[in-house]
Image (tube, rainbow, N blue to C red):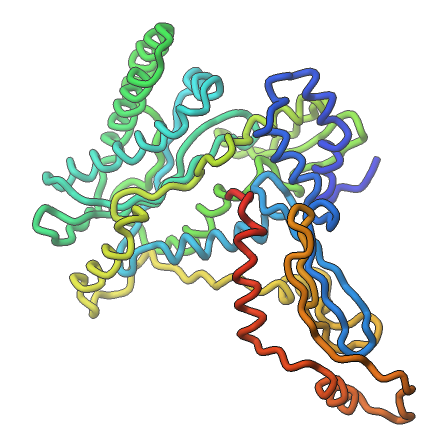
Length: 438
């Protein structure tokens, strides 16, 4: 039995993906194959491309492969969770209080979304309509609100469980363009409103007559409405890290490496915390069944798992941000649900924290390495940087110090400005990432 690490997930798919597609032909299509192949090739310079650094003193070369940047990849999950957390935090409107809302559905309704993934877009719109309806009711006036909505399809055990995580403004702009805060939302009303909007959406978007039977069952079996999480009562204090908490649903795969306990080439054992009991449960599945449980959460290519509504809409966002900054008094006390999210760390710092060494120091002589080449398997050599002139053949004088070597290197370097590097890197990044989807 091999040790468990971040490559275990890759090994499972590498060993069994072809057999799984024969067992479940539905998954043998470009949407699934592209995602799995990207994940399997993550970190492979031949498949993903690379950047090449060269030591300007001794000529040593180091290649660093590109990663897949897919949310299905365990290797990419942590870094991109951090980056998404920073991005979401910057999208929140200054001085505005947010509530975290979770909207779920009964198990017997989930099959409709599994059969027709296009319904997931309608699900996200229904969530936005529901929250706007709730705040309008609480305010007794139409409000212009803002939502950041994230779709998650995986339950804690990996089963298919589509639900929404939403950061909602605790208030909105009234018809007079003034901000109206809503500090209390009746919990029971949220349950009923969500039930109404979800069932209304299903009735409007599903043509199969069998949906009526499930809609009738939903009204009959859930007289108090569907489960919707929101801390009851007034807006609670604290709430630090909401962006980090929400961001993990954008880029995290349906299972983390720490939850995989064993893999012997045929079966996989893993654990999860049961949502109802709070207890740790252990499960062992054959490889093909495990792959099916994971692959069912791959969304159609181009599907936007995170969406912005109302004040956060991409077209209106900057204008609304500036307007709210004008009408919200600057002396307003700090938001009790405010938090601080650090910006993304540079690659060299992340590498040092993980491996305890600087990736841009030459492993041979300890001198600094400089960017020399960007290569992509589809586009070939994208950019080459001329870093230094011809090195002399004469041997290094005895007693040469490290500082003298640095000065010698600087004298041999062709002067390339920082702006030159940045402008070229920024120019070529869209080409590298044109096929990526978050």
